[in-house]
Length: 80
Image (cartoon, rainbow, N blue to C red; front, side, top):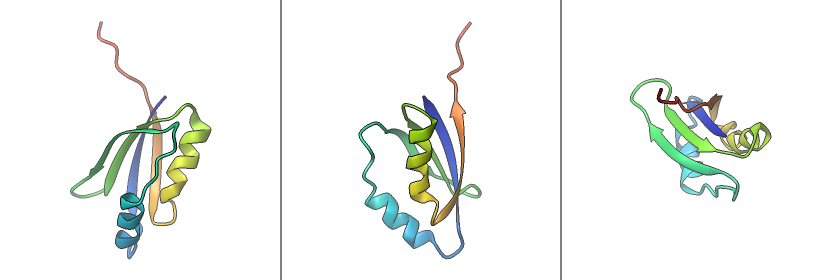
């Protein structure tokens, strides 16, 4: 499954988030597709693959102490 998360950094937590990102050890069953910093809000965009919602939630909680995550399931658009 593909997941799309936005992260709004909690004020004063930018340095802590950068530390988490630099030392991030991605679980074996999680594949990060893109991790982007954005100009404006939200602050970051993360797309990743996980086997199910439970594993996705466990992974995204890595960032919950320093950012407000919002996550959706991404569904590829089929060409017709």
